[in-house]
Amino acid sequence: MVEIDSNAPQLSILVLHGPNLNLLGLREPDIYGVSTLAQIDTQLIELGRSFNTAIESFQSNHEGSLVDKIHDARELHDGIVINAGAHTHTSIAIRDAISAVKIPTVEVHLSNIYKREEFRHHSYLAPIVIGQISGFGAHSYQLGLQALIVHLKSGIRF
Image (tube, rainbow, N blue to C red; front, side, top):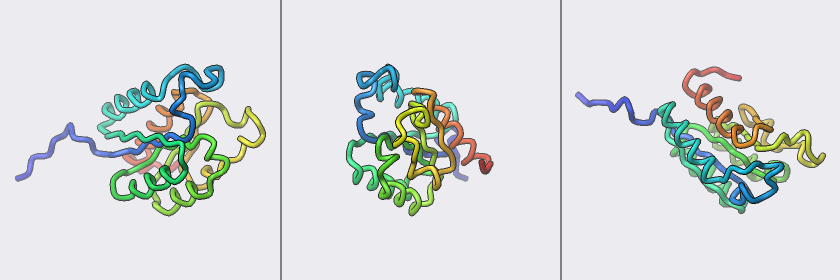
């Protein structure tokens, strides 16, 4: 008989942070808030633990690195939370990578992209992700993670 550790993570989620998010806390705090990326990641790891979910976080300013991480997620993770930053509005490559791996993905943004410059109103990711959360600052990540976990654990399709 094999013992199962009931405390072992049941799910694994990859959290991806795109360009310039390494500057959170310094960059335009009136728009993006004062939380640092490290603080956001710590909060997500703690929230993941409360849902018996492992969290891996990755930030890159380079589109190809994000695409590679999405490809690698196919074998490692049950879902993805992504803030692609400016790549949201420009990257067909990231869109195609998410579409190709067929991993449930939630798109998040710190600011409400629809209240900002016109070019930010379009997301290449929105049509292929299960949902999008924007405008709640650092809390957008937590809301996105919770929605993804509910989606994965319950089979609820939003």
